[in-house]
Length: 162
Image 1: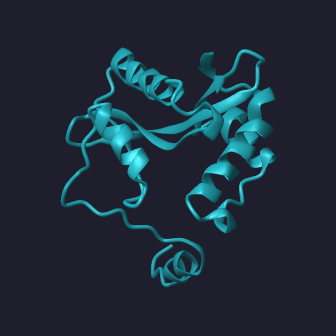
Image 2 (image 1 turned 120 degrees about the vertical axis):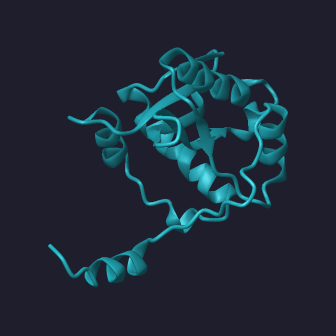
Image 3 (image 1 turned 30 degrees about the horizontal axis):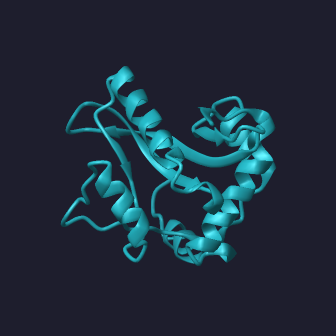
């Protein structure tokens, strides 16, 4: 099996895996990304999203890591925010998830980035155990906040300056 940067020919398979992940995370109704959107995000004029895929011996995409750059004002350098890490159920336990995560860790080390961060659902015990086994630790005392949909639109509408 191979881990490599995502290519244009992988986009449909990556979207399908993202939908599998969303279904697993009980949020399929929120997974609205299209292949066209992903292609633009990864390969458009100013890509801000990057990715790696795990490919089986037949060339099928069976895992993914989608990520983007973050910046730590405290460390004064970039980091990687891992948006999605997913391996198809039939391929779990083969080391592909660990290899995808190690690929991003190596990228951080090679580029001098200070952090590799991600979020995980509290109830996703297998993922929490997987990340702990890799040496990752939760950031105690921090909570993730998000504005989306109507709340985002309404909050933006209340802006008083232009």
